[in-house]
Length: 110
Length: 116
Image (tube, rainbow over all chains, first blue to last red; front, side, top):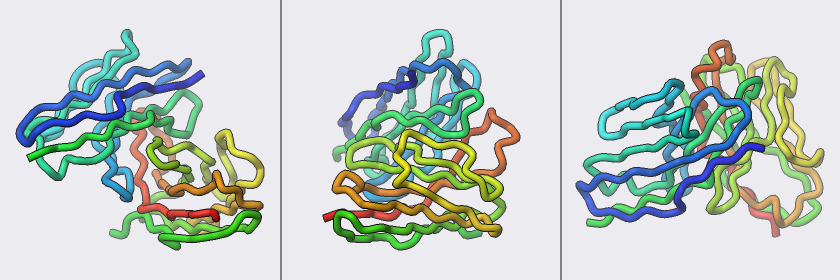
C-alpha cells in the first residue's frame, strides 16, 4: 500500500520556527514534495527532495531520509502569511500521480 | 504567462445530475491531472491525461470520466452525482514526465462542487 502521515495541526508565533514531519510507506519512491495551500486556494509547489539531505529555499527548508522513510519541512522566521495547510506528497516508480498526505494546518499567531 | 485555469469556480448540483468541469493547462504543458479534495483532506488523484489518452487512473468509479483535447485542455465529467462528490476539484498540469526526478505539478484554483 501507499500512505503518508503528517501532524494535523501546528500553532506558532510570528518569528518562530516550525518543523512539519512526514513519514511515508510505499513500495516505490522517487522523491518527496511539499505543497502549500491557503484556505480555498490552489496548492503551490514549495520544495522537492530526490536525494537524502537538506534543500534550502529562502525561509523554507526540506529534508529527506530515504533509509528512515521520513522527511520534514522547516519553516523559519514565521510570518502571518505562512498560515496555510502544508502537504507532503510523493511520486512513485512507474507512477504518474502524486500521492498526498492529509495535510498540516499551520496557524501563525501575532 | 497564464497559469492553470479552471471553470467554473463554483457549481451547485443536485443528486443524480451530471457535471462537466474544464481545465486549461499552463502554457507549454501537455499533461493534465485531476484531483478531488474533500474538506480537510489532501488531494486524491482521479486520473491523468496525456496525448488525449487516459494514462493512469486512481481509485474512482466509472462515473468519473474525462477527455483531453488537441490543445491539451481537459474536461472532467461526473455522472449520477452523489452527496459525497461534494469537494474541490483541482486540475494540475505538468510537462511530459521525461525526467521522473521532478514531480512538480502546477495546480489551478479548483472548482468547488456542492451536491445537494
